[in-house]
Length: 244
Image (cartoon, rainbow, N blue to C red):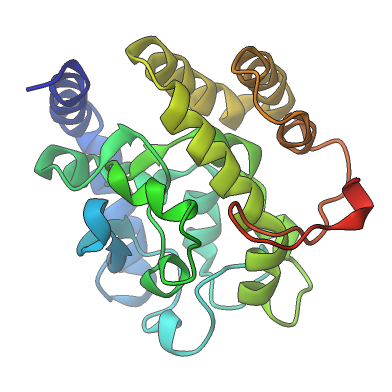
């Protein structure tokens, strides 16, 4: 068993015990809202390209995936009142410690993708499927405001694939190339910091990825100090002149 997997098991086990009162409180809050299941079982792309069932606390109305796209804007009408709170503090994802315990996920790794989105991957992006998906990664910090980015779009899925996916994928591939146990610990810490101060987390993350000596364009976009515009995903042949 690798050090990474051992750490995942220890932290997931301890986390489920330590946070059990909070997890129960979230479950009850969601259930009392509409007397429906507090859980949402989300099919996601697993390591190797197969499928696994990712566990989340339900933050949207029942059957939300049947009445809208897979990408969610901040003002999405499908989000419930309790759901807005749990999403704001990432509590809907805390239960994924169970997926980590089961071995479907890691604490740190590329965020698991909807199967239809993974089906759009270029050959370069498919390398993200060679590792366990994670609860957090650099893109989780950079795009913690994803709902706000997609706000107002008439097609959130299309906008996601145009202006978010290309950068998420580049950050995930950079992480895979430079991952260490120390990097994982730092990213976990920055994920917590981002809840209290996203600017501070972005500055610290910028210092980290600059040391990786990756494409300066990715570093610029990760700072989130300029507007996101459509850009081809890693491995695509197209070039966007705006950035040349």
